[in-house]
Image 1 (cartoon, rainbow, N blue to C red):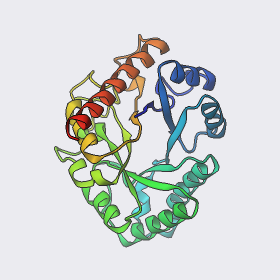
Image 2 (cartoon, rainbow, N blue to C red; image 1 turned 90 degrees about the vertical axis):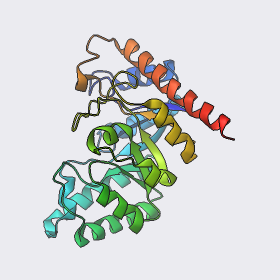
Image 3 (cartoon, helix red, strand yellow; image 1 turned 90 degrees about the horizontal axis):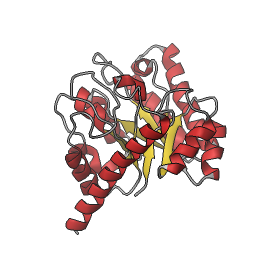
Image 4 (cartoon, one colour; image 1 turned 45 degrees about the vertical axis):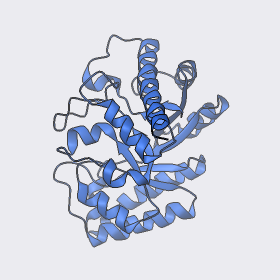
Length: 265
């Protein structure tokens, strides 16, 4: 299994493309993902592939995503935003587009209008050779709805989101069979405390995380989704120190997954 880390983990614009690629390679990260609306995505993808680093997924924009459930025809712009994300994936031969279904504690209820738009998105992605991975946020209802209605969609398990958004619910026993992408990070399981810290630096049980992943049969990238500035814990770390620490944490999780698998086969 490869280890990976999100693009711009050290900070948006704080390192050049070449500096980030060099750090990924130096510390053994075989994969990354970027936002699909990054204006430099095409250049980033080319630079990564020159060093045999895989752009495993893209992350679709999610600002204003709640309007996708509205009956207002003007909210079709949310669907256009997601289709543009699929286009970015297809253009760069990135196989998976990670999509949020909603945002916030007061996200709208599932609706026919939202179903129609997501149906169009799934069909558009399939036509363009891209797979949609729905990511868990705060609402169980909409992601359960999506997996019932769209059997071709996959699951992106965001470990940190589950800890600080889900009020004790566990998503992997429900959707682990659909797992195609991971977002791994740490926090203190405080509601809305989405800190995107390096694993083992806060409060999550990563042995349990590894057990869920191992039981699912997932063989993809152990992908960290980190944001250096969100917690304030890493302000004094150099790029080398930060990426080295992150790589050690990702490798520890990967090794635990492999060990669990070997013990159960």
